[in-house]
Length: 87
Length: 329
Image 1 (cartoon, rainbow over the protein chains, first blue to last red):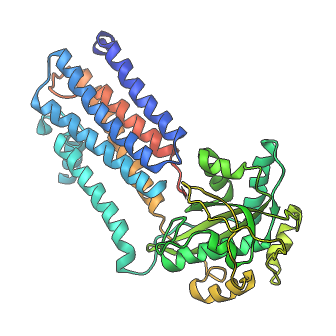
Image 2 (cartoon, chains in turn yellow, red; image 1 turned 180 degrees about the vertical axis):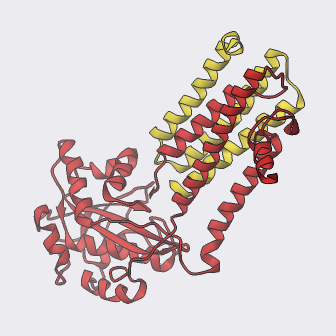
């Protein structure tokens, strides 16, 4: 909790990105290509957020970069596979 | 006993997994991603290997689509559209054409425009439009999807249209059993009201349907290709019109459009959604347990933020839950 309070602006921006993505998925549910773009943009944004956050926090290293990259890829695969079947 | 140890190694932070659940290691995320891609490949290849078991079961009636469309128009302060059996025949014919020639588009692979189906049935249009939908489980979901799309909504709420025809076709599209809804709009130069909407059900059941033939001169204006959904202004020359009855008789034996037996189908969307929910749900639970245990044990770890990862997967979980099946064009 202390870490969250210390980096509150970081987490607010992260929540902003994620909430915006959810709203985009609701508002543009009819546009498959646009939703694919949002899925990729959200995953890329999360990866970027992780790198910037750890860089500012001073604990960025290669394993952290790989972890954020793997999670972003997994997120993108989950969203894209669903979009491929849904819209 | 060994299995329990392996399960704990996979799900809980312990000494054996360097105090981080093995499922939350970078390598595990990548393995899960690869497995998800493979599962999608299997879903795509399955129809080519064996019998048709993939599909979307639906319960959609043309009458309901007409009723819902008119409800939207009334809500927007517009007049209701009159059900036209000729348009319905043309719409059904377009749907069957997509099934028989295996395409999903306004314009067929050989360049055949939707307006050809209007002309084939002898519908002399002044204004014409087309909305397409597939893989929806019910009519309200399809109409809502059209209404959420600005271009499709414009078609539904276009005051120039006076008549509507709906074709609901079931068949195999790219190896997947699906239900296609074709919504044709139109108005003729005469704009005669043929049947009130309340009589749509009776008309649909009647096998004796005659195409509308206008005695008015036809303006020879080239149809304009537009972005989806299609709207066109102008009539085109007509060949001998086809009737809805002829199309139904021809198609019954071909694809089983109406006489099709009910069978159990595996929906590609539901399967993907279930897999996604299981994966994300498991990861969220393991992240929560991992976060609590690491915090209590005061274990110092180099790695990403558990709270951030939880927020990211929470977003994905929300999207997985809100996404519905169905495509519009």
